Amino acid sequence: MPVTITIADIERAQQRIDGLVHETPVFSSTVLNDWLGHEIFFKAECLQKIGAFKARGACNTLAWLIENNAQPERIIANSSGNHAQAVAWAAQQFNLPATIYMPGYSSKVKIQATRAYGATVELCEDRFIVDEKVKIAATEKGVYWIPPYNHPQVIAGQGTIMLEALQQVDNIDAVFAACGGGGMLSGSIISTHALSPKTKVMGVEPLNANDAAQSLRMNAIQKLTAVPDTIADGAMTLSVGDITFKYLQMLEEMYEVEEEKICYWTQWLTHLLKLRIEPTCAMTMEGVVRWLRTQKSKQRVMVILSGGNIDQRTQMSLWEQDYLDLQPQL
Image (tube, rainbow, N blue to C red):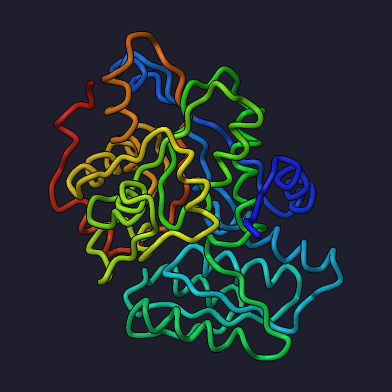
């Protein structure tokens, strides 16, 4: 049976996580709006618990399990970063032990934060080994696996971002969000289509990790054969899921962004918004400007800033070249 997630599921998720996660603010830059000639709004999930939107899905999943008298003895998860922190944090909120399988190349900031939330971290050579180990662990009695994106309650939790954002700002013409495994985008599509049917939803992913774009072009899920080489570590997933792919097929467009542009927009958004912003979500602005170039009238755009966890290695790579002398324009 195909899995269907509705706006009612997302509204219930919002009720479950109320008081546990933040209602994040929406920012804008007058300077950027003047330069581009449009209104851009930024939903700052970089200010969410654990510094990323993933707290919503992890928290909702655990609250849903407990609500349905299915509390596990132990939680496990596989992630290269923000989902790892989110599950560790959520498990701590519900006093449950957690084991997180992470690739050794994960951001050191994210590894340390996951441990700081009380989880046991098992580092593996690469994402392939991570995914195999978590599947084996999931067969153990009393263990519940919270996957990073391909889970109805994870998606419902992420859907609360746009449920919240559309209550904060009205008359949005388009929503842009980064695509890793597609959980945030799937939730955004469900919420946006239900609450503001006229609003378009667009995805953005690194050109170097474009499994979602390939999948959409082939009309079938495509899996990357090697760990992608991208600075956008939140979008290094090897493939989307069967649940998320169904929703990604409802997107208006999926934009693929070069590494140089990812660095460019990370620098500029950090400068203009005075926020700590991960490359994974900063790259969405490249999709925004490409879309705006095709528009004949002034548009109101919502951009989801999905996270703000950056380690020193990534910061150094980001600033190897200074892009701030190249002003954004259409």
